[in-house]
Amino acid sequence: MLKISIADAPTGSGKTTALAKNAITMLNNNKTVIFIQPTKDLNQQTAKQLADLNRFAHIELINGDTYPKATVARLAEHLRKPFDQPHVILTTHESFERIPYRTGMERYDLFCDEIPKAFKTVSERLPHNHGKLTEAITVISRGSSYGEVRVTNEGQLRRIAENRKNDAVDGIFQPFARSILDDNYRTFVNLEQYENLRRGSSVETHLTMFSLVEPKLYAGFQSVRMAGARATETILHKWFKRL
Image 1 (cartoon, rainbow, N blue to C red):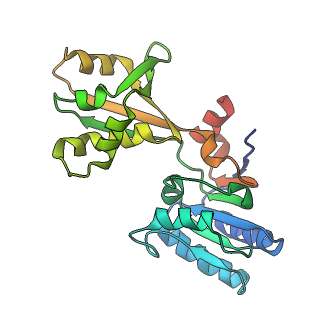
Image 2 (cartoon, one colour):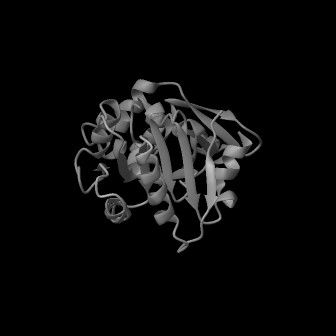
């Protein structure tokens, strides 16, 4: 079972400093830490803080500033072939979520500075030939109002998600396809809105999808620690408690 240590840490309370000190303690005990934060600037500040706490600490700063064109690929490669001594990897929440293949998670302790977002949404007005997207999925009712999106034509969705020809229409569908294909999320739609769209019974062609993160995104690590303001009141904490 996934176990996450949650700490309530109001803004300005020294949360990041406390996590940095804990990371150095882990490092001194021959542990390797993946330290994820909301922004690249915070990564930079924390890298300096870690170095001040232990000038011998090996720190891998992997984000859009250090690897602007290959952040996620560099992260995935590092996890596959890590530095052979205890170290700290600093990256952003966004880059961490986008790692396509996760191997060797058992080698790491995960620190989350700020509670990650529990869901993401995609909302767009779709063209009338939306069948290219909607015919590649099916929707299963999960109550009277919402349905869960399931894939029926993965190849079609992947072609839309990649959009190698930079097709303008596929560009509109692309964020939907990417959300649906993201294995770390469960995606839902409003049933009434979706059925109206499918039947063409309304002039409204707007579609909103929202995706809830799966606990497996944070599974497999030696330990997981999350700290943030009013942490136990966040949607993520309440969602994971229900599962």
